[in-house]
Image (cartoon, rainbow, N blue to C red; front, side):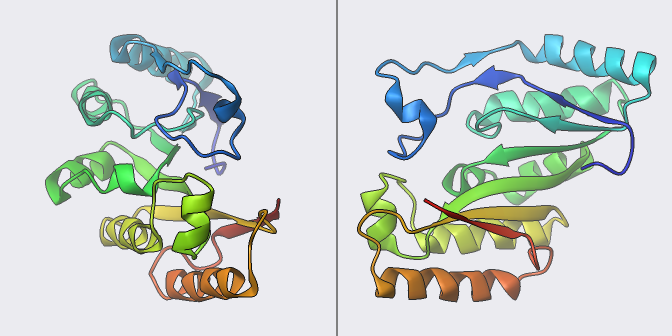
Length: 193
């Protein structure tokens, strides 16, 4: 997202995840607060009408956490004939709650990219991170996106406390598998912990 006039928007704060490395994990009480989708749709219409915005980055911690809310957003864009491209972040396992028809709606509404936190290819390390995710779900999320021609981007962590050479090798193997899936080539970030 950035080929045309674009802008970030935020429709919610908070995440359903409990990853112990995340800044949100420092809050004992972490409710997700949301803007009503009707307000979000009106904001996008305003941005398009007044600033010719063609693309938006939904800057939520996890835009896909509530299926009903996300599908209402997609339907709202289509019903209001808002022709805009958009991208957002999601958890791999939460994207997998969508069936093919629902994910087709996501694509038709303008979604062109989803960013994921894959974090590691090691299920042991993912458990240590309290990620509530396994490496196979990362592959499944990439496959789902590829099937619907939605680009996906994965973030990984290296040097997490307790990471072993075997954990690192599992991450390298996962990156190779992701590289073989259409629309994921060259779209992963590896960050030192």
